[in-house]
Image (cartoon, rainbow, N blue to C red; front, top):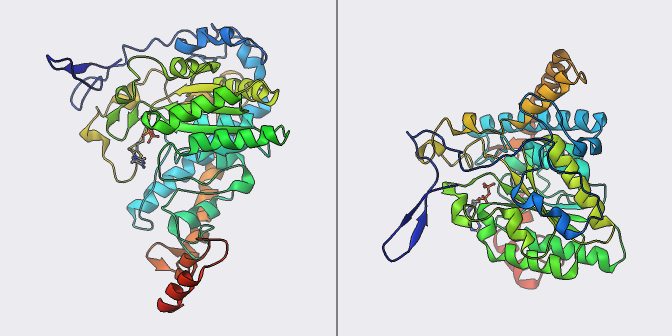
Length: 412
Ligand SMILES: Cc1ncc(C[n+]2csc(CCOP(=O)(O)OP(=O)(O)O)c2C)c(N)n1
């Protein structure tokens, strides 16, 4: 995919395909054709997954039409639910991006262009299953019934923050809703998801886990350990790499993406692996559903690489115009996941433009009202903040003597 600089002693430094001022270049991708790869049975042998290691599972074409047998795994109801959740996710992101710029919070991370992945995966799993997300899968929360105000309270670190002001904005925890506590340390959730799945299997439960990791974070040792354990123990876990091609300013080639696909690399651990158009909601739901059926049936872990493009800045602390062409997002051949789904809904007669516009208006209103409520409680530097006395709590289940002393010293 990308070029690289090689010294005469062979030392190699990967380079992105284009820098600011250069034309975007996605010529090294082979996207294949929608509908071409055969539908797999959940019990298919591992070898049946081979065409999906370098190939790309696609259902929707770029005109919004669905192709091939994988489409049969996704219902009209799924698509309506997905559309609503993706619209809400984007509306939430837009509002929180603005809130950060207005100084209402210190930090935010959006998932622009990646909404179909989290939303599609959440739709394919069941209540009781556990997602082990990164900071870019907020779409799960919009499927799993979390009140956006609770998320905003966390982002504002106010009195109603469910995490009592202890976490950086967006590092949510909603375990009762299948959303495991996010950690700032990249990659740690990957083997933890495998362990959670092993526990489910040991207990004879049919619940499964799903792990997410960014392309950059696959360079962490945790990725390799998780892959190995998932394969060796045949843990009921879905291991998904969200390949958005960038890790802050770093090209995915630094994580090995220009040598082999992430699907191929996970297959090398003996895992059945699929590579999926992450901007195609039907492909995302269908692939994850197949993986979930397989894991639930006791046939072990499944790996998925979702290919996408990080549409926005890495975070509100990042300026991508310093390291990639401005036009790159608009040139990404797999387009925008929300626009593609909207187009599919209208092209296939499932919804009208007016109905979609009404959903967008409702989401805008919902987020505005949630923000007003959260703001009334408090912002990061205004109103009622989280109680500082709580900082001493939950370090241990019971507060040890020396912490109690510190708490008293601090005047609480
Ligand atoms: C162990 C560790 N190393 C470095 C960082 C700093 N860091 C935060 S996000 C990030 C980039 C991650 O990129 P990627 O995994 O591709 O995910 P994306 O942000 O693109 O979704 C880095 C290096 C960290 N949080 N944890």
